[in-house]
Amino acid sequence: MTKLELINKSYIGIAGYISSDTKLESLELYLNTNKPIFDKFKGVIVASNYAFDALKERTHELYRKYFDDVKFIDLDVNRGHTFGTLDLDGAIFDYCKENDIEWLFHIYDDQLYTPEFLEDEKLPDAHFYYWNGVGYGGMEKYDYDLDRVAKEDFYPQTTQYFINTTKLPELHNKQVVTEAYDYIQGLENYNGKIWTVIEGFNCENILKNAVMRNGLVKHHMIKPDTYIRLLNFIKATQEVDPSHKQLIIDGTVHLQFPDAKCVII
Figure 1 (tube, helix red, strand yellow):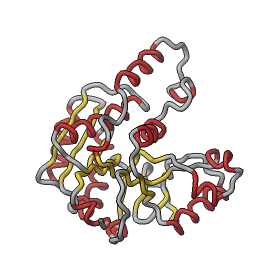
Figure 2 (tube, helix red, strand yellow):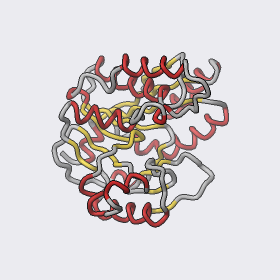
Figure 3 (tube, helix red, strand yellow):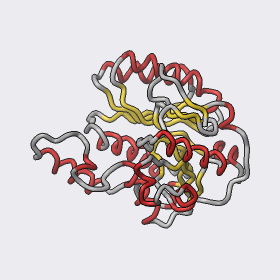
Figure 4 (cartoon, one colour):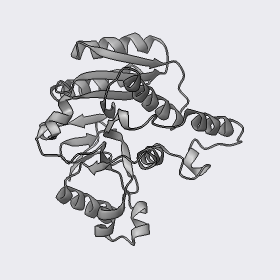
């Protein structure tokens, strides 16, 4: 299978929290830029939660402005950092399962793509095509040996990945997530960072565990030369954030801060 063949048979699932009209203004810039890329996909699924109800219809109108056929999943409750994200991710995955959608390209709504993303290439057969996330702290267990990091590290970003939904029953165990959420409700002075309370409880580890537990065949989508440059950049700058914000990597960028400068890897 080629990359373009994978794109053409995948639905793109976009998850996001709509906080304000300002957020919608930024979102329109992203959609306008990404439309030539998104039009190559089989369809568009959008899962959102909202700061207030009036934003729901405005969000629908915005997406319909750019795409003829959009499937909307609106969550009435936002359970906050990590939990709200897991709810959105799970809702998209479950929709695909319920509607016999085999291939999903999951992204967050602050991902931006350039035409380079559509450059075709032969891909090995896999069930999970991912972009690895690594920060400076994640290199410590490899003694900062970049060759070892490149060969051994598996920490898939949840910002973007292709997944064959037929190969696993669920993205995460909803009961386990809810039990963790209920647990933190009783904590005094909770800092909003669940992974500091329950070790390993974050979106990336939960996705990683789903892939490993179900035996999915995986393939890393960052080109080897690009990945080594990325690792050298992270080591030199001691960047701890594994989500690679503002870094342009093979035609993709997690553009969380639209007005901030980006670095081409």
